[in-house]
Amino acid sequence: MQNSSLKELYVEELRDIYDAENQLVKALPEMAKAATSEELRSGFEEHLKQTKEHVRRVEQVLNELGEKAKGKKCKGMQGLIAEGKEIMEEDFEDEVMDAALISAAQRVEHYEIAAYGTVRTYAEILGEQNAVSLLEKTLEEEKETDEKLTELAENINVEAAEAEPEQERSTGQKSKAARM
Figure 1: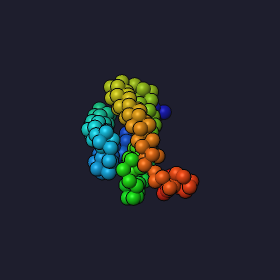
Figure 2 (figure 1 turned 180 degrees about the vertical axis):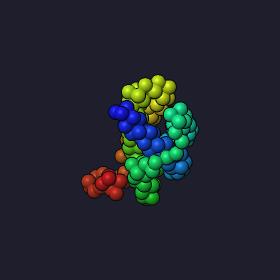
Figure 3 (figure 1 turned 60 degrees about the horizontal axis):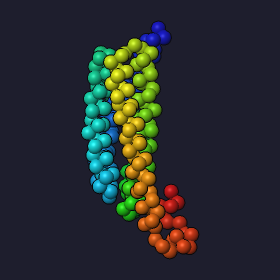
Figure 4 (figure 1 turned 30 degrees about the vertical axis):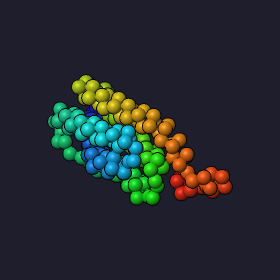
């Protein structure tokens, strides 16, 4: 009976992730369009391809469990995407916008890392070896994306700081971006 309850939780979490990934498929093109750094734009476009594969993998895991591949509204991802949209509506310029986009993207990655780590563990406990393999592969890709974002941030954040108007640096006044 315990395994049955864990299996139900596992399926619910998979459906949540399925919806989260589908939300990202829609959001990533907007983030790519808002990016001014060619490297960041390219990273978002590459992650979109990966995310479509993540959707396919979750569908496969659900199908192997005899479950329909349907989403359960992921409110966490909905909130993260809404925050990302707010950032894109700000009047940040160039490198500052890119720094803000990286911040939003890393929040998404950390959310996904937590979610995939959890369902992978459930799959291990439930003896779903193929699912463990698929979920582990996705988890590793999410971690790699987070690492790439960190590498990009190291340069872009410095460029954003250097782009701050001279007057604000010398008088100590904070721009809208610095207050965030």
